[in-house]
Length: 614
Image (cartoon, rainbow, N blue to C red; front, side, top):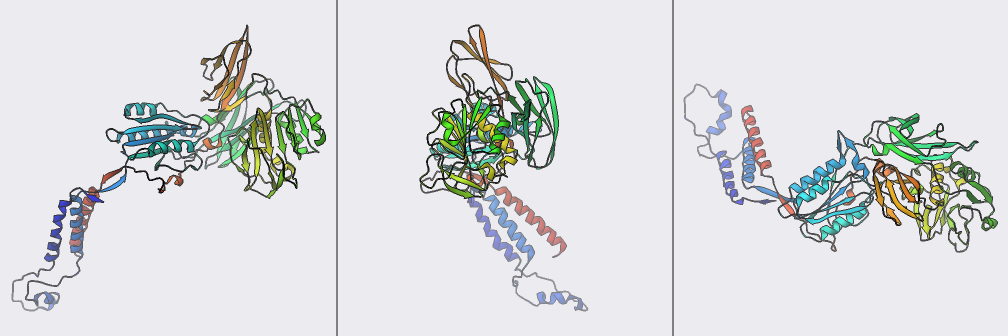
């Protein structure tokens, strides 16, 4: 604390005067009376002949002294130093992921974030430099050290929710790196906190400004077309819905084709729970289906999802196994491809296989096709790729990348596995789920060949008995199925990209957006990233007099974005080290009004005590 007008402390000389007043003896006039019986309490005062008396404890004196001290301090204009909202260099990191689209009373969390950002800018000092960074599934640097505050406000006003995940570490790295270059700097992170724990080291202090309150949301977690196991093998639509709210919900799940209602079913979900429905009627021959939820909740973008009839060129699956009914029936449930049972010694003889599924066996030479390895063998000698060296018993499985295509809408939390094998996997594969010391699920791509690993025996788990099983298998088949020439994934998450390859002889390439608009694209192989709106997109290529059209669906299916419960992040507290000592600006905050108010309150109390005669 420091004082802007310390000369006012000369008034402290008045403090002894107050004490002296209470030491003076009152002079009284002598008056003859008939008796002093009723005046015994005054005898002690009238016995002294000196003008002074001994100082006695007195509550009135104490209150007056405190009031005078408070008043003197107020007149000295005290201030305290705090973190400046008006540093010369301000870095704003604004979350514009989909959860920031949560809306209450017509105002979204992103609107609240924009308002708080503008307030920070408004109290910035003259000559301040503002850097603006946004983050969703990727970070974007909008402005660096801009002194045009109106431009910064316009850029903030243009922000919209995007992406299907939240990559916080990249944004923190960029923002604190910019701030650490200047001594007088401050970083503000404005978000609802719906992101994973920050793992990156802070290079500069970060002030977390949280927006949002409610967790009231339900979302589509899965929408997948399957085939009925029984003849005539008609299509089934499997839909799972999760209630992220802390209260029970009644939800109407409806499916549409070209905005025409096909079927509806009611779901009742307890708080923070998930359930599913299966639609069977009216699906035959439909190329595109929209799933809609009707329910009161705060985030609407995850209430719809689109499903396209798969156009994968998957006709033959080679199941290399000594017999696994769970795996065989599971594959038949999620794919119409022919399944050939092959022994481990004969798998290389199957020349018609589009993909291989290895169960309890790992080939020494990897196939030149996409493949799935389930329950790899344990070997005593040094294990080769996809062979195991031991077990981890009864692990709790943690999802490391729930937004990966293989794990989308797969809930691993309640799954029980007796043991997971310690499998040797190649460097090009990524662990998607793991136990304490083992990798349970992994996936990756090497030189155009995709592979998935399930490092446990399905028969030693309750996975085949759970809703997650057909979803996981459908995701795996979708991931490793070969795509026909010119074809892409039929479903994408918001913000994901798709590769567009021109057909031979194509004279033009156009893409139709869900809102009906159309854009001409370059006649070359390109990565299309403008998937910010949910719905059906269509790529059309003019080849001579023929138009070749390919649709793909974009939806928001993301547990992290749909779970809108705001969260605090104590790990953002900055710990200064000898290697990193950024100097941040401080501001003098006036607190004299609080001392003036204290003086007034003390005087009022003193008056009340005097009247009561204490």
